[in-house]
Image (cartoon, rainbow, N blue to C red; front, side, top):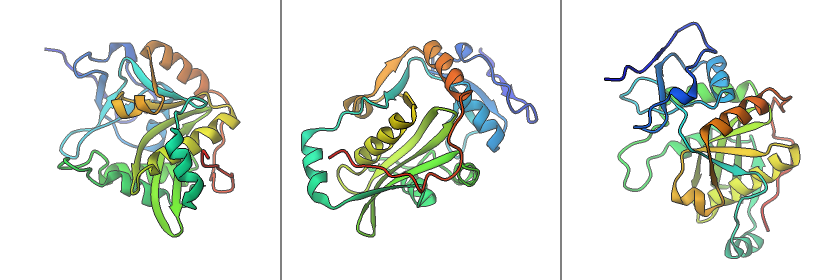
Length: 237
């Protein structure tokens, strides 16, 4: 029986080598610790992220392969571009972080619950207040129709979740965010775990070892800390 490492309560930056993660379930690396800003930032900078249900301890993951978007490689269909040209939608950053996160936390069709529990919301709201967690919002007049949120560490952006209240809302948010990140020299948006929906939008898989090495390099670079509310974003028209 494999014993999963438990994180020390006070040694915030210490994580096991991601190459020691389990293959089943893919990428499970450690458990325990806390969701303090310092530990979360240390995790992302090492290619590790938290993912757990409300009835579980905090679980830390680093799957192999890793799913990422190259920030100049998001696929936007012609039909969505046509929709956006006539929609009147607009896109903003960091104007409604909590609303985006809670919309992402709402159970999806056919799902009994959500992994974005109240502890996660409180932790990432604190990261947002400190200028490390960010959201992109898509609006139809006063209605929030889509969004995405995640964490920026240096020149690495780690996407956590996105939602659509209208068809195309999450794709528009993702494309707008990647456009801004590409301008700033962020090569990747980490999408963490592969699924067919992400692949259909242009996500690719890379080996964990390659991703972790790149994540550490990017995380050590100067970042853009603070609110992103003043930076203009564009929909993919």
